[in-house]
Length: 268
Image 1: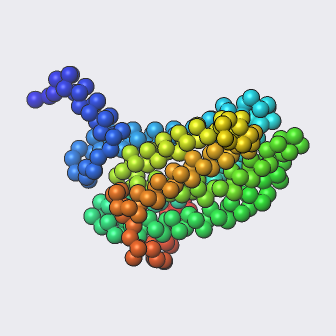
Image 2: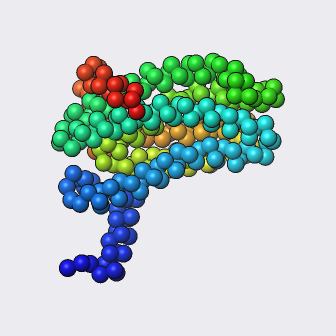
Image 3: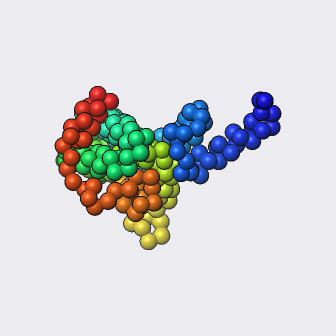
């Protein structure tokens, strides 16, 4: 007997509610269509939240002039390359954690998570070193004028120097998604964006007790929001409140897992 239209609509709204609130259901059991729906909604919102950082920065620095807006736009263009590397590693991490989760091997998922985080730290530190030390030169390569370089080099230095935070956001959210907890990944980006939205005007304009930093304030606000988001992610991993729990014994090098992770992520 097919469900009535009213029951079908009610089920859709319940599924949307479950997707946004989250649950500890096992996605390897039950209809695959519903599982995809429950995972897709928070993943779409998560990706939208990641794009919101740059939009918010442009919105608040717009009153500082065209050179400030150009600084944010050019830096976001450079970050696209960083996003590509981070997303490639995140995709491999999600696949490996998902496989171990499906095999009912929580320890294997935790080991894969630790290796991914370690690899991400190494790669991101190299990128941060190159980007942070060469920000004015990179802006010049992107076609920035002397005025943009003068105003925006510090902004670009801070943003590129903090790419490790961006890597961790992508990687740990990949761990959450692989374990079937896409809602937690979405909430991390909500938290980071809320902090960025609150701090951006305060640090740019010097509201209240905050210093007036101009366009640099946007970089500090974004780095702070993302940093607190990463702190929340690590707390969830280490506290045992998430689906993947990292224990002290998991914090060691596993070359076999690391090599497989690097091989898959390089292709991605």
